[in-house]
Image 1 (tube, rainbow, N blue to C red):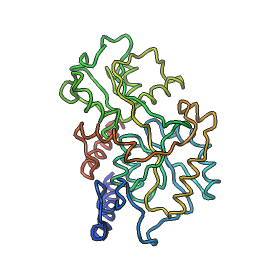
Image 2: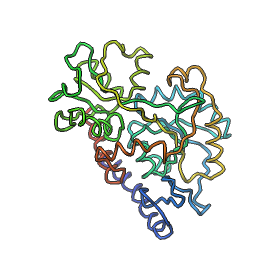
Image 3: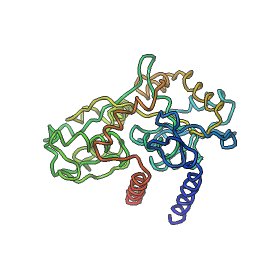
Image 4: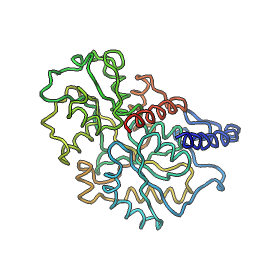
Length: 336
């Protein structure tokens, strides 16, 4: 574990060394980390000006946010990764990641080229890893969204958020929008203040929060509605066993993003391949009727998420990320 932390520190340290040059040449950075530049002010990292810094790997590494067991998503995305390999004429591999922090660190270090990031971690990936979101799962007319829902067991005595004072409530992970940031921003107006009215317990993932409520380990949990529905449709849980006592506004679901430093022709080809792909029946079933990757603009599509994060006191900075990553490592270590 000590060696892993030293290696991560070295990787991140290299990024900051590079940033010294970027700081001298960048006219606008916004909220991006020092090694990135945003001169067109679209809130995402520009491609490097020096073609020598562009990457054109022989193997494209792809992953999807670990909101559930990564192996589940490797199987779900198999038809797409097979198609993508043919479309770009390169080998495509699915990289299983176990935490949001690990996924962001992988893109920041250059080991990950295209990825689906969960809603909350998307902003960390943009600011700290040079991720450029371009799509969300959707249909021909709109992108797919989800709600933050607070779930309890149907036979529990809890009917409103205020009933959960002093109870055991599971949040998913520190960077999760619906599993942590949105509850901190939205629940106080409903009479429930996280970390004041109840001690936040991190489960690690949305599915673990849901299963924990089902087993009685937790009294309640704020989770993403789409994960809850998928688990019910797969038969992992019975929807009738739960009661939803709170439902938020709609948020965009996971973003799909490319690394900012890919060779522009490769970036364009990857994005085009995503947009042209149509989900086969098994993927449509897994993703609640979504049949394609719907084009989005990060600056506008993620505005509500950034507002919620600000309201919860969250900042998508390096120091905030380090705290989140350490928390995720500590929680993982406790589960071993």
